[in-house]
Amino acid sequence: MIVLLLTIPIIAYISMIAFRTLGWTVINYEGYSVPYSLGSVVLYGYATFSVIVPSEMSYIAFSYPALMYVVGIWILGFIDDRYGSKEPKGLKGHLYFFWTKRLPTTGLIKLIGTFTLALLFVYYLQVTSLYEAVRYFLLLSWMPHMMNLFDTRPLRVWKLSTLIIVPMLLSYPAPAFFLLIYGLAIYYLLFVLEGHRQALLGDNGSTAMGAIIALMFIQFSPPSVQWVVLFFVGIMIFIAERISFSKVISEYGFLRWIDGIGVPYQQK
View 1 (cartoon, one colour):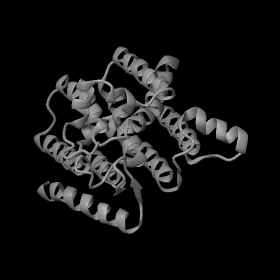
View 2 (view 1 turned 135 degrees about the vertical axis):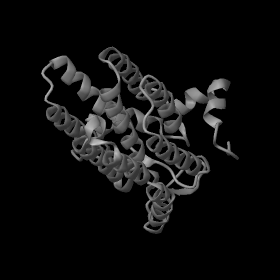
View 3 (view 1 turned 90 degrees about the vertical axis):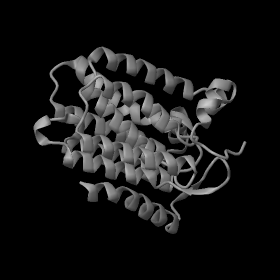
View 4 (view 1 turned 60 degrees about the vertical axis):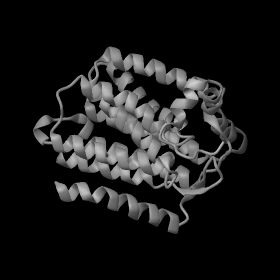
């Protein structure tokens, strides 16, 4: 288990160097070229969790079909990172571009692919209730998109993930000690690397995080909480089509303070 723990920084370093060498980088908000390699670490961490979580626990969130769904979401995000462009923006922008140009954008491909993967996973779950099927489908398709919307500045995805995951964990018995340490180690390493702008999540990492969180809601939260979460996610997606989250955050001192936590030497 200690060996597995030591692989985290190795995977993070190798992927960061590999992405930079291959030119898989993006110009961030400060004008620097940064590799979008952290999604690889997220995927590696989740995959190892799927292997080491005891099989007798029967966790849907860490099953192999769930892993295939997350891998699919990661691939769609990576395609958007690798071949996408900054324009058009928003769901309406991608749909309008396809309607007028008759050409699918990588964003539209990601949208259709996410819906398809969500449908396939809901089919795998073999739910008998229509309400349950709709709830799961919306969680699996909306959550990756919302996390992607927040990924415009360092650590926003991690901070939002913390607000979601910590209360969820506190409401259940503590996991095995190694699983807790392993998860914290991954989180800490990614937090530091992104906070210091050495690497970033990109679409591949933010959507993969959204996919994992959607699975955790399905596994660990009651239907009432899931509906509340879906209402919040729907509102966020609706707002993002009309106004930039960064603009809203910049207007409120408290939000700016939270936004700056863990991001040293942030240039304005």
